[in-house]
Image 1: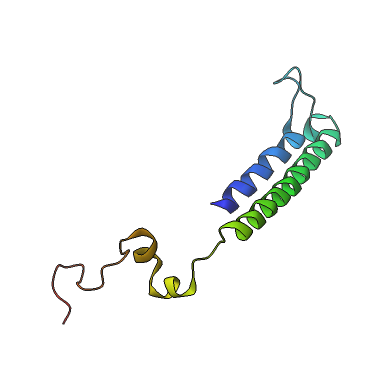
Image 2 (image 1 turned 90 degrees about the vertical axis):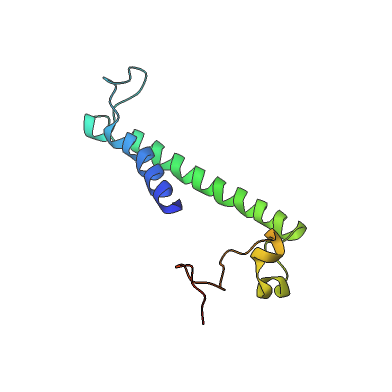
Length: 105
């Protein structure tokens, strides 16, 4: 899902630089395909780049803070035993019977 939202968000932002029309939005300016030149396209591309850098840096800072406080991983023995049972007090998969209701022999 991240890839879909990333690509669609970038395309949606950059497409304004191509298809923007002042006839649709009287406050806006024309994009590249409507005779406005590449100025709007450049501004939109710069906006995408600034948001990408900001998001990367903010995520890096948040991730670093999480790692230094509570950590990203559970302890090794908990991970080997099964995180579902240890962290959530339930099992994700019941391995003692088949899906048809019969016993596994």
